[in-house]
Length: 118
Image (cartoon, rainbow, N blue to C red):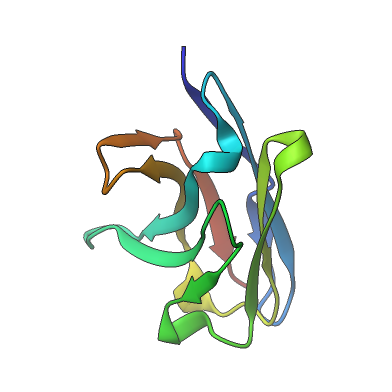
């Protein structure tokens, strides 16, 4: 049974930092591209950052470049999202995604809430 479990969300003040974690199980983690998406109320779910399985190549949404860093530890089946200099507009539910084969296999976590507010 495939599972993706996110953690690390919460309430933080503008300018603060959070680190999200996502632990995968039930699939060969190292082969999958792992990504973080986010969805704010009334908006679509958008890609935040992704990291490939083989080469560890990363990509980021323009809105988070220079502030967020995605990384993975294949030995721990875990992907991380380090979020610095957080802004109120970063407030959203953050979802972990695992995909391979052009989304032939495509799995989602349940999400973790991040709220940036003073």
